Image: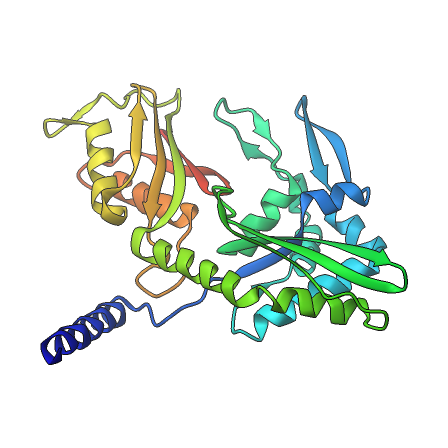
Length: 317
């Protein structure tokens, strides 16, 4: 028994040393809480728009905050409950103001074919906020006689991959006197600790295994080379593949290419750079640009487009 306990203590110490050396320091994920698609639709805050000839159904969060005081109250209260548990937060309402003030909703993102693609406002919000996890919140009030209750649903998703992370739902005890704030707090407190544990587990996994993003590398017509061009006995595709093997977490990515374009998908990049700052697809793509632009390759290239979780690198002048 003593030997087993000694081994256990040693392993715990080893884990602590590894995390300490890596700079982890028990970071918590940055979260942002937004009203769910179902809530937005049910309350009439969605509409179909034409985006470069493509019909998209988008949600008007600015209109929702301007016309539904209950939304402001509910989001604020749930934010407070997460903040009290030391989760860093990004405010959807503040990000909306930033987007509108900077007038970047009119900027165009370059598409694969070089045609302007206007990124929808919510994707721009997610890109600007740089939240690690987005929590979609739904709530419904129920009335039975003189008693009221409130049901909430919390759905956490990765903002880049949109993959589900955790989901919880809860309903408050019926009450004839409790306000919506009290009912909401009760419903959230029923599940928040278990929910937060799942969020933290996901974030810890990303710290170990990296954040999943995509890259597209394409040849411009002005460049007289292609991705089959040889450099010191290796074609450019192989050189780029070797770079991703050395710079992604555990060398995890999927690469497909032709002589004119390369697609790198499900690339796992570190959450933080050497200074402890968050690392996103743009910053990671700039590292590849610097590598290819320098000696011995001296290949002209630039990061020409960035969408949420994806960067585009154009090779050529």
